[in-house]
Image 1 (cartoon, rainbow, N blue to C red):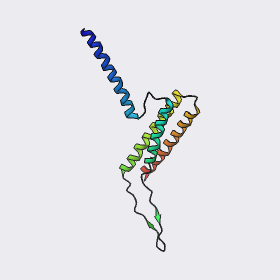
Image 2 (cartoon, rainbow, N blue to C red):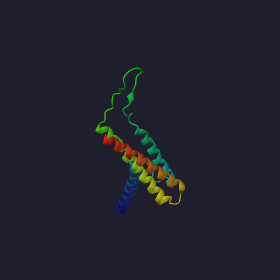
Image 3 (cartoon, one colour):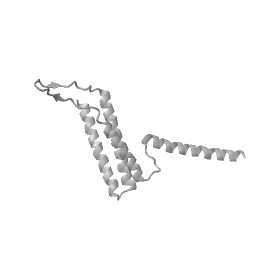
Length: 139
C-alpha cells in the first residue's frame, strides 16, 4: 500500500510540474505552445504590433516659426538613458519575437508562403526597431 501511495504521489507531482511548466512557458512568451503554428505566429505578430506602437515615445525636436517672428525651437524632450533603455528593451522583444516567428516558420511550416512572409515581416520590424534603438543611443 505504501508503494502505491508513492507511485500516485509521484504521478500527481509530475502532472503538477508539467502543468506548471506549460503555464510558465505561456507566461514568459505569451504564446501557447499547444496552439497551432499559425496561431503561435499570429500571437507573436500581434505582440510585435503592440510593441512597435510603443516605440513612438515622443516627437523629435522641431523648429517652429511663428508668423512674423524669428524661428524658435520647441523645448527638447529629455534624452535620458532610461528612455533609450526602454526603446532598446522593446527592440530586443521585437527581435526575439521575430526570431521565434522564423523558427516556427522554418521548423513547422517550411513550405508555407504565408509563414515565410510573416518571418520576413518580423525581420523587417526588427531591423526598423534596431535602427530606432541605435539612433536613440547615438544622440
